[in-house]
Amino acid sequence: MSNFIELQDRRPGPNILEVVRLSVDSLRKSERKVAELVLASPGRIFAATVAEVAEAAGVSQPTVIRFCTAVGCAGFHDFRLRLAQSVALGTPATHSVITAEDSPMAVVAKIFEYTITSLDWARHHLDPAALAAAIDILSNARSISFLGFGASGLVAQDAEQKFPLFGVPCSAPLDTHQQIMTVAMMGPGDVVVAISNTGSSVGVIEAARIAKEKGAATIALTGAHAALSAQCDVMLLVETLDNTDVFTPTTSRVAALVIIDVLAIAVALRRSGPGLDRLRQMKETLRDYRQGLIGPKPAE
Image (cartoon, rainbow, N blue to C red; front, side, top):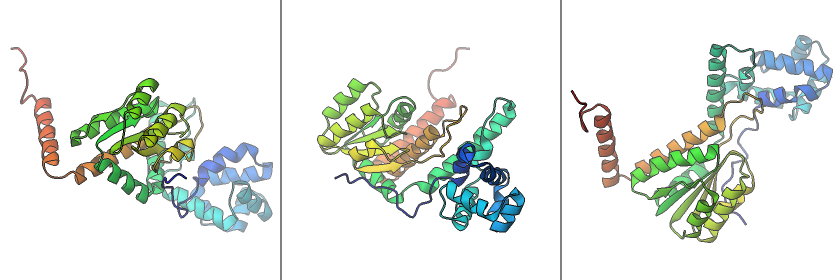
């Protein structure tokens, strides 16, 4: 049986504003009026009564209740709580949907709003126990391999750049054969960080399975409860807002990069002493090089 660490039940469910937006076309005509009112003015709704919402939408009170049920809530009270929670996270992602008619500055505003809101959502849904477990494993690693494909491969390469600074051999092979070869040589003390937003990348799942079979510790960095989780000792669920629009920004990759930064800094703080001193010296050397204080001088 898998021993991966999952999110606790106390954590909030999906962003209700996104649920409403994605459900509009499937709602009854009268329920759609309530949905449109919610999307147009969410802050007004979570402070209103059923009667006030019904009057504002031009529908009956039973229609408001049916709408709440249709979007997956236990009732109007549950809907209001989830709506307040979504609004509290920041600018609703619903209002950040990009259209072909948007000006460049509108695109700037919407992408920033969507990304900031999604990052805040991911932060509130991150499991502290799973994060602590991942930091413990990485802090004591003999070697670390970061595995991913596509956008997740870019996250793996970013991690490969950071973690060797702490004196740990790292790799981020992007080829399937290289990944399998790498994990097949692993053993106790080695660590695999398997990165897949969907949690269903076949090559990454198989590599994680082999690594675990060889005795290596396995960490899943993923955006979904899926097959990858069953092959890993710890699951870091980095949940971003669900949005399937054509112009959706790549918030899942941004969120994963932030978590890599969190892990890297936390591990650096654990590895105090000579290792941290070398890291400071490296930063100072890099700063001096950038400022032209060391290195070859330009020809006069």
